[in-house]
Image (cartoon, rainbow, N blue to C red; front, side, top):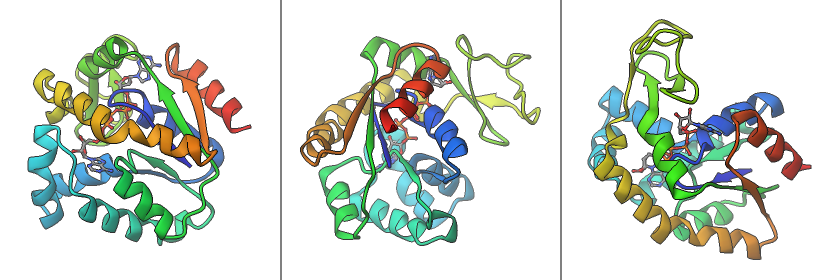
Length: 207
Ligand code: AP5
């Protein structure tokens, strides 16, 4: 299945819960790219300049990355795609690969909530666990509850870059909602409320 939604909609948050609940991996292209940037690989060097600007990494790079990931043994019984596809080209490439989707969940969140969520998001520099300074704060400010690592703000979560990411979503990714609606796969999930409430709605939408 696919989780669709604007930056900060809670895709990563819900994908982690759904993955655990359904016993399938969460495949987040954003996480894969950030790991490549941190490792300093050639993919990471290529992706970094796009990500820092809030632009999309070119389709051919991402499509190749996902194609390879989907061949891993843990993806045999299914998976949750978080942040992919993000363009019509990527969606068509997935189809061309013969992937049969069960559902596409579209998380619907008003722009002002998205901005608040992104502004307060913190990620552990060591283990990647996510928190929010207001909505799900760590016990000690700046320190990860899970591993004691330092919690930091993502490089692309600065205001200027967030504005660009939202524009890119509206221009290039929002058309996928219609694309999957026409394919009869779209399930709309209101993305406001608590994380637990949205998770319950997502499960209900999946039947
Ligand atoms: P990516 O990492 O995928 O970023 P994104 O889509 O912009 O989404 P986010 O990670 O910002 O938000 P989210 O929806 O996962 O929300 P989250 O759960 O964190 O991509 C980053 C970059 O990589 C892109 O800009 C692009 O350059 C590149 N890229 C990635 N995939 C690509 C692709 N396919 N093609 C081309 N380029 C690609 O939640 C946000 C915050 O809100 C958290 O702090 C969380 O704790 C909090 N929160 C969540 N739910 C709630 C709630 N219900 N109430 C209150 N707070 C909440």
